[in-house]
Length: 88
Image (cartoon, rainbow, N blue to C red; front, side):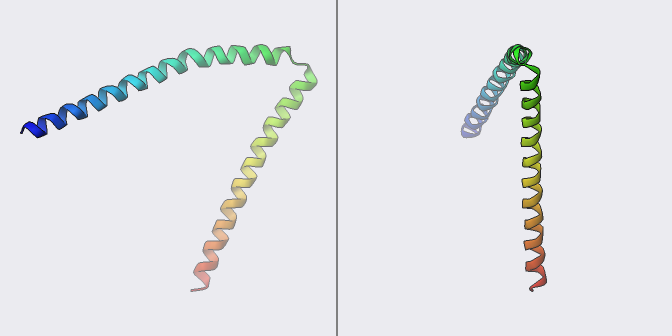
């Protein structure tokens, strides 16, 4: 019984530690993200219209490239899987 009680307290202590760090991280995000958003907005507003267009275009090119690479990897994995199934 004594060992079980000690394990229970250790488990409770782990839970309290987790909740503390979770709350700390959440509070940090709630304060840091709006500040970061304001800072980025100031930089974005200070950019010329051509630089804004270039930044937005680069952002979408990176997203499209990542999606294409992901799609290609999945397609190749499916083809490899089908090839192994057909060769049996």
